[in-house]
Image (cartoon, rainbow, N blue to C red; front, side):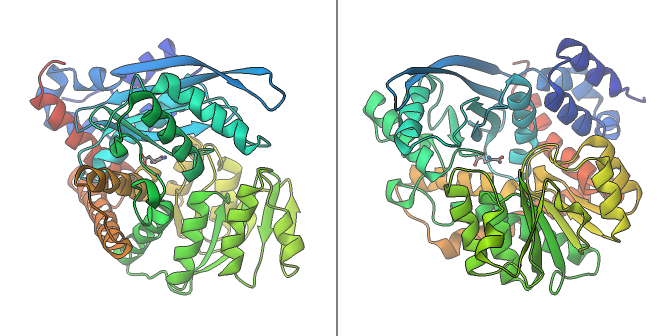
Length: 448
Ligand code: 2IT
């Protein structure tokens, strides 16, 4: 039996033509699943794919908050609870002006398989708002978070749905959201949100976890190809939480980071981005201006290239850590022309489908985001277990577990790809390994 996976994608495209990130994610995941469904006709019969494509719940709500001039401001809040077969819905909140239902659904769909790959008991979700945090005062951010939680609290809970941070939502925002949840409900339910500060039940090392996990994943990917990360030059995009953790870990394992970027252009620092220069990324982010050019004023050995992406810089390893649709076909061509062998996604959905196809067709080994950046959410699940046990785990314990989880994600993705005839294709393997875990749980739970 040969199964036409395109028909599912076409149905989604027809139903939601404007939801491009959702379509892109569905297309990517389903394109690997034909051979799996051929071996599991019972999943076809039970309509596992049709059920998987429909979110279990998706809410949107009005968020009204007061700005510093005493004026009311209006935004939209979202929470997509896509699939809860493996555990409470789990995924970040994104505050950014381009947030709309198609982006939230696309990210939530990715999150289902990412969370499944961790091997931990978490379902997939995502949420956020079109609120733009750039240029807002601290009190404006606080009032926005309080207004957001005044609605969101009705939909979340430690055993229901556990949001965390994403773009525009860090430790500060999670703190404000948690304070408001506690005030509204009257319960110290620490496990309702992850990414909290350690003083509020947060996990030591959660801030670094996504970036560290990405580098652990890359180490496994290189090892499987008889190579090692030591001495490799690397280029990343972005300067947020993921970029910062990745830069720190690259230095620790003896790789040399030479470029990073912001929406305003990119920084080239051939002397190596290490130590205080990595920590300076946090200052750039905290400035609320969303620009990286001040790095070149502070460190004169660096050069700033306005309006350009960093993908033309020659390196051994490329790691997009900024945002979705960051690497287009023209960039993939530059990356291949630079003679690169390894490309690993740090951000969610950073590579356009034609760019991904070009990289893989030209022999570049690709680490997909849903596998490579799963260390963040894996540590969120560890935070949930810390809160449930009323205990505190040490940073050393967390990083040791994280390293083991990233090896498990790499190895199970590689094995799944091999088993279903894709060779060493981690993109297909991650989709397959994640899907099989979710499909088994859905099948076990009957027609719901
Ligand atoms: O994209 C992601 O995996 C996240 N933003 C983290 C989700 C989480 O629940 O920690």
